Image 1 (cartoon, rainbow, N blue to C red):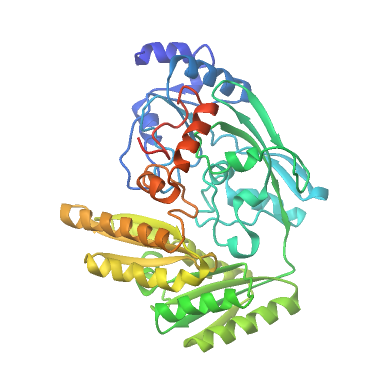
Image 2 (cartoon, rainbow, N blue to C red; image 1 turned 180 degrees about the vertical axis):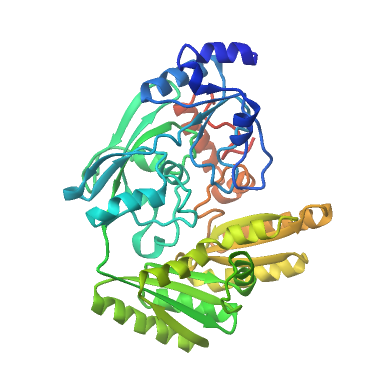
Length: 459
C-alpha cells in the first residue's frame, strides 16, 4: 500500500485535518529522548474517541499496517519510535481529568495528561499521585503505565503499577475492553491490568486510566548529605533501608553528575558524592526519620547533613536532581549518552555502584552514576564521543556488562525505562524460555503483529 492509498483509507476514519504526512510532523514523531536511530512513520493521526481508535486498529489489522501509540515521546529506550514505519497514533491531546472521586481517593484520566499537571490539578483536593518520575514535567500518565515507570517516590510509595485500578483498552481487533474495578483489591480472574502495565503499547491502546491516590502529607522535609566517597554513600543507603528507614525519596548522585548539574544549571553544589532525601509524614515521625537518617549518614563518614523544609528550598534541591540526565546529555553535545537503569537487590546496591566504575575504567570510558538508591536502582550515564567509533564500541560494551552484572546479582535489565529497542538483547538472558510465553501472549492480543512492532522481543 503506497502513501496515497494509506491516507485515502484513513480519511474514512478521520477528518483530513487530523491526518498528516508532512515531513515536519513525521520527523517530530520519529524519535524519543534516546540516542536510538530515528524512523519516520508514513503518517501521523490524532484520534479523538476510542471508537476512532477501534476503527483504525481493525483496519490496520486487516491490512497489516503497523501502528505505534505515541504519548509524550520522553522515553529513553526508543519505546515509541516507529521502527516499521506505518501509522503513529498521537495520544498527547488526550490530556484531561475525566472524573475525580475524592471520597475513594481515585481519579480517572486520559493517557496524555502530564504527571506534574495532574498533581497540580489534584493539589486543591489534598491528594496526589506519588510515583514521581525524573521527567515529571513531560512524562504522561499513559507513558508511565505503558512503561511501568517509577521514580523518586518508589521507596515509600511504590510503582505506577501499584496505583492502576482500571483501564480502558482498545485491542488490535477493535474490541474496547474495560479492565479492573474501583475496589481497592480483587482476587477475581487473571490480572489483566498488570499484564497491560509495562506492555509498551504492544498489546493494546490505553484510552482511560483510573488511579488510586494518596493524601498529601502533613509535613515534608528534605535533607542533603555529602560524603567522602561514593562507596560510603552507597553503604549508607543500604544500612538505612535495612534498618527500616522509609524515606519518600533517597537519591545518590556522584561527583561527575554533580559537576554536570552545576555546569548546566549554573549552580554551586559541592562536587562530592551526595544523597538527596525527602521525608513525608506527621511532624514527630518526620523528625524521628531525619534523626535516624543523619545518624546512619554520619556513621558512614558524611561530612555534612543539611535539612530544608521551605517549599522553595526543597524545590531547588529536587530540581537539581531532576536535571541530572538532561545536564549530562545536553551539556555534552559532542558525546553520545547512554543511560542504564538496572535494579539489584538492596544488599547488592553498593557492589553494583562499585562495579559501574570498575567496568568503565576497564574500557576507558567516562561514566557518572545517580539513581533511586532506596530501591536498588542504579542509573549509569555512559559517555562516548560521537566521532570516535572505537570509543562508541567500548561504551556499548560498558552498558552491556553493567546489565550482565546486574542480572548476575539477581537484578533486572530495566527498572523503569522499559525494553523498547535498547534492551531487547537482554530479554533471553533475563527471562529465558519465558520469552516464548510472552510471544504467545502478544500473538493472542495482536494476531497480525501491528502494535508497536520491533519492540521488546528479539527477532
